[in-house]
Length: 242
Ligand SMILES: Cc1ncc(C[n+]2csc(CCOP(=O)(O)OP(=O)(O)O)c2C)c(N)n1
Ligand code: SF4
Ligand SMILES: [Mg+2]
Image (cartoon, rainbow, N blue to C red; front, side, top):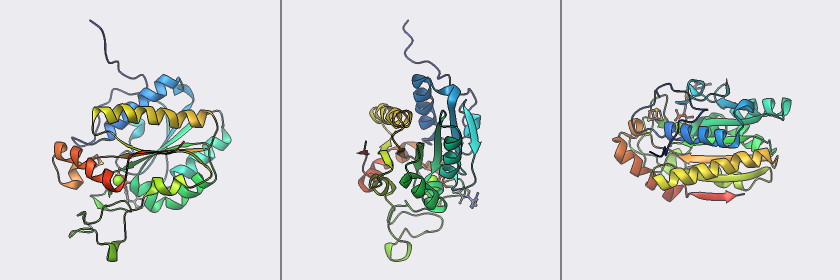
C-alpha cells in the first residue's frame, strides 16, 4: 500500500496542548514540512513569542528561543546578525506582533532584516482570555469589548500585511489561511517561498495566517473554522509582495 503521509522529522511527537479546532497545530505541521523539504533543520532557529504558541519548543525540533512579549523580531535580528548562516524565523500572535511588539516588528521589517516572521492572526489575545487586539474586527465581541468593537471608541482593525508590503526592506509579504485543504496546500507553498526569500538573502519575509480561536470566539470548532471566511473579507488573502 502506498504511504501518502509521513510524520515530519521536524515535528516532535508530543501531543498538542491547543484547544480543539485551533489552527496553531495545522500551521506547526506545515512549518515542519517546509523545514524538512528545504533541508534546513540543523541550522534553523525559531523565536517563540508570548501567547498560546509559547511552548513552540515542545513541538518543533529545531533550536527555539523564547522572546519577551513583543520582542521576537528584535531577538531574531540579533541571532541572524550574529550568525547569518542560520535560518531564523519568528512565530508570533497578532497581539505580540502588532500590539506590544509593533515597534520592534515594523522597524525590523523596515530595516530589511533577513528573517522570516510568521504572524498568527486570530483577532484576539488568545492566551490571556480573549481581549481585544489591534486586528479585532468591528463589532466583534471580546472580553474587553463585550458589546463589540466600536470604531469611535476602539479604532479600526490594523491591516499589518498591507502596511508591511509598502516597506522597501520587505521582500516577501503574504496573508493566508488553513481552514480548507486547498488553503493548507497554498499556505505551505507561501511559507516555503518566505523561507526561500530568506535563503536568497533578499530581505524581510512575512507570512500572516488567519487562524481560528474557537474558545475565545465562543464558537464550536466547525463554526470557528468557517468563520475564518468572514475574516478574509477584512483581511484579504494573497501574496501582497514578492
Ligand atoms: C510584558 C507582558 N505584557 C503582557 C503579558 C500578558 N500576555 C500574555 S500573552 C498576551 C497576548 C497574546 O496574544 P497574541 O499575541 O495574539 O497570541 P495568541 O495567544 O492569541 O496566540 C498578553 C497580553 C505578558 N506576558 N507580558
Ligand atoms: S485559546 Fe485560541 S489560540 Fe489559544 S489554543 Fe485555544 S483556540 Fe488556540
Ligand atoms: Mg492572537
